[in-house]
Image (cartoon, rainbow over all chains, first blue to last red; front, side, top):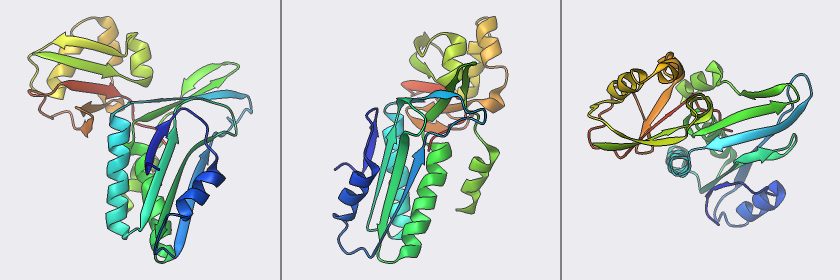
Length: 148
Length: 83
């Protein structure tokens, strides 16, 4: 399975994690994170529309993955990210990391998420009954990169 | 030279297009932005706050002083919101 996938189709995070965990030879730890389509504060989110820059997205994710593998000595790492129209509660994306000991797998997963947030060309738009609005980037997400 | 320009998210919506091919002599991203701004009010408005815009040259994120003299494609978009 390709370790970096960008797709419109839904995915089964349990099945993905099991498939990942069974192919990581030599690892003693597997960590995963999944992002879920969150409702807006007013509770009337109808859909989340995710746009991306096909071509650049794959390149950016492959670079982020390679950097995480090298920095934390990971045995393996995977990134899966959806685009298109998602319903509240739908899984948006997931990352999984494997390493000999847990600290590197945890750190690697956090690193992947921090970079994915503000360096992978995805843009989210929240669609509610009152209209549609682009999600603004948060300063904290940009600041999070400085810790690496 | 001929250059492909791509726009994403609110920038694409504001300009009413996601892609165009232009003839330009701009040497950097900043020069290209100046050129686009000079086109009409719509472009001037869309590019009024460059602090809210990021750029990529041939699918790599760059600063506005990046050289585009050999670029095939330049993209403009708001700060990314992945994850």
